[in-house]
Amino acid sequence: MKSLLCLLAAVPFAAFAGGSNYGITPGAHPILAGKVSELSTGRRSQPRRIALAPDGMLWVTLYGNGKLVKVDPVQMKVIKEYQLPGGNAGPYAVNVDGGGMVWVNEINNDTVVRLNPATGEMQGVPLPSKNVGIRKMAVDASGKLWYMGSHNGRLGLVE
Image (cartoon, rainbow, N blue to C red; front, side, top):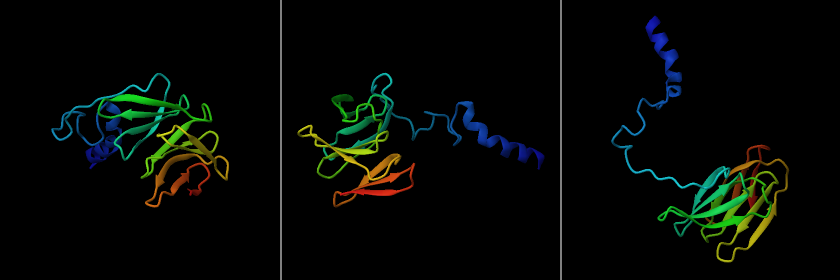
């Protein structure tokens, strides 16, 4: 019984030993093996979220420098970079609606920005409350943008 208790006490610390907390050495399991590629988004860019657009492109928020980038996943290359209107206002969540419009929030100034990738036009939408803390957004089938304020505990809707 004493050895069972010692074993159970050690299990939560197994992940700190450099391995997986699922008992699998990273890269060793045949189902998990495969090619892994990475793309640098730049020094101090601090990427936060990623969204897949209907055209297959990826959109990534760069919290550290106030930018949004469009990535071609086939070429593993940034093909367009956008400075957001709030400057370094901490772009965090990103989503793309069915029409290809890109939605990104600026967490430090409580704003949601809609980008039209075809024209480059950006439209800012100030949120009705302060210290919202959007970390994730979703677009429903009718094109409405939903967000959850992790700081203020409010569900929001942009129509």
